[in-house]
Image 1: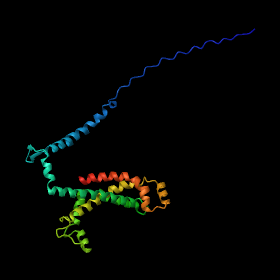
Image 2: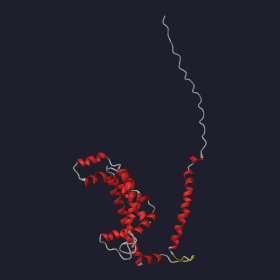
Image 3: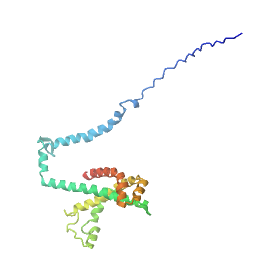
Image 4: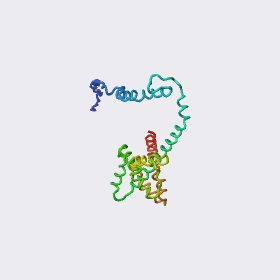
Length: 253
């Protein structure tokens, strides 16, 4: 007698009712206005202490105003600018400023690059040399100026005695009081104080130059200049551009 087995239909188990998700409380720090809230103090400072004086200066430049009576000026338009650019003394000042700017940027970045290349090599006392190169940058500007003035003193300055020993003629009024030597003296002092910053930044950039690239350039039979041009310069070029901009800003100031 055959027994017929029938399979009972499968009844799906009803799913347990899901709990509604809890609503999280909105934190004030998660608001879209939070970044603007933190920017308010900085924006207020810039507007009050920089933008407002800048607008006032721009307006004063368009007026004929006496410093003894700042509120009693008369609007003259661009007449002040026409007069100042026609002044030979102002034109001479622009030329001196341009020379100062170019020499400071080229001198500081160039000297910094040379110092960084030297400090990047392996030699005894490298750590001490890297520390000493930062001394001019760390020296206060006022102290540096006073020391330079003493060193260039017409009567007791050591620089004058050294130059006279080598037969260099010193102006009777002194180096800093002569129109022919004052600018070079200031430029040398400024470059001396600025180049360590460029040297330290460029030294860190040289550390990222791939050794494999350097070895490949050397295996190609290139000289030192070729290795620098092919392997080193493409890596440090963006840093050199940034340093040129920073040094230009400092020189203009």
